[in-house]
Every structure is written in C-alpha cells, then in structure tokens.
Image 1: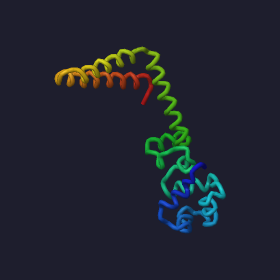
Image 2: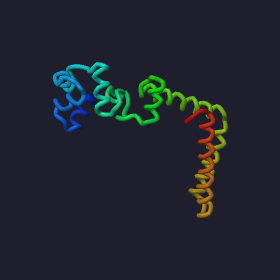
Image 3: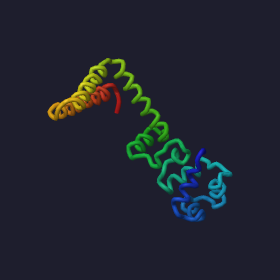
Image 4: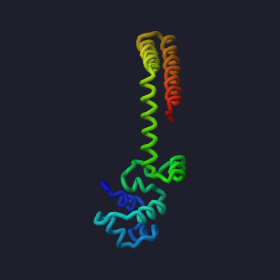
Length: 154
C-alpha cells in the first residue's frame, strides 16, 4: 500500500490501538505491525477493519479515493461478487464506449455548433439574445445528454 490508510483510520478514530484492535477483533500486536508499516494486512484483517469502520476494502488498499461506496455501487458489488474498484472500472469502460458511439455518430458536431452559436449570442448579443443563447445552450446540452444515454451511458 502506497499510503497507510489503516494508520489514518486509527488516527482519525481517536481510539487507542488496543481499542481499535478490539473493535475489529484483531490482536493488538498485529495492528501495531500494520500501523507501523512492518506488515501488510491479509484479506481477513482487511475485511474485519472494513466491517468495523464501515469503509471499503478497496479504499483501505488505496484502489479508490472514496472511503465508502454508495449504496447503489455496493448493491451491484454484492450482486456480481465484484469489488468496488472492479465495478467502477466497468462503469468507466461503459462510459467510454458510449462516448465513442457519440463521436462516431456525427450528431455531436451539430450540437457543438449550436453551443458555439449560443456562446456567441451570449458574449456579443444584447440582453434578449443572451437569454436566447442560454435557452439554446440548455437545449443543446439536453440533446447531448439524451444522445449519451441512448448510446449506452449512464
């Protein structure tokens, strides 16, 4: 682990190492070795710490920046028997595929042109044109979002 997140969790908990270890069902000496970076935690230890402090094993391992997975991601993880990190990677791949579909479609050029025109109205037009440009930009972004969802994005 590049960053000792277990050490951070112990320090943030304001518990002594003995109290922290007891809460997790660990031996204090084991926790002390992990805390000081002289030993890497095994899978069972990671699971115990994650369960005791409601954080993800992926966060403890430094695989994600989010300490806690949201309920939807946890449900998907449980259903698929995958880690939070794996589910997030799959989601990223799906988003990338949706963007590739949009870019290959060509409709995005029309939408981009509408946004450029809306920006010009906003920057160089009078008050009425500025309001119209915001409306045009809103419509263009809505179309872009619909195209993205249609292409398989989330």
